[in-house]
Image 1 (tube, rainbow, N blue to C red):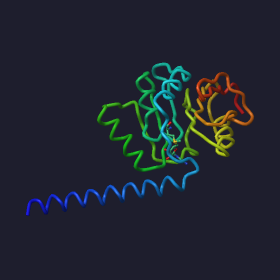
Image 2 (cartoon, protein in one colour):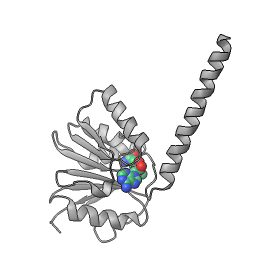
Image 3 (cartoon, rainbow, N blue to C red):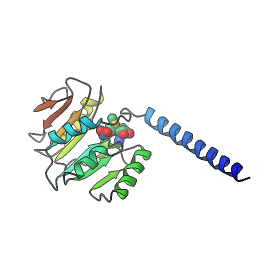
Image 4 (spheres, rainbow, N blue to C red):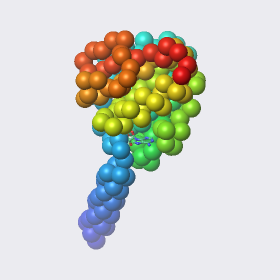
Length: 179
Ligand SMILES: C[S@@+](CC[C@H](N)C(=O)[O-])C[C@H]1O[C@@H](n2cnc3c(N)ncnc32)[C@H](O)[C@@H]1O
């Protein structure tokens, strides 16, 4: 009898995992920017190029599992993520509770409504036609002096802006004037 109960619990967990995996996949399929986590080596390059100072504000536009937020918080930054996938939001919130990392905040809302005015550093992970939209959005809304770090497969990420520096497929831009 106990074996039967254990089997039943196992089947319920298996079904839940399948449903969760499926809904995650469905949410992701409808996004212009699907979930792709930045690889560890690239996280290190991004953090180096970001040159984060303690108490600066960092924003990740589409924060995924929050890895760039936690890496920024380790440098002393207040790290804000905008993420639309509820599973990734939940994952980041649970991780910040477990790590007692109060400097990491994730907002479950569209990145296109992000308030960039407070950001010293902004992370963008874009591809294809989203890059022009990112360029317009960031350069219109970020404050002067903000550093923009772009992770992309493209060789010319922002169509009309020139990067200050690039390293291993990561590009650094600066908002040098208010548009
Ligand atoms: C390429 S992943 C980048 C994840 C993370 N920044 C990293 O570097 O590991 C893009 C993320 O943006 C999220 N996303 C896509 N469209 C979004 C939107 N309109 N608003 C907020 N997040 C969005 C996706 O769910 C996904 O987690």
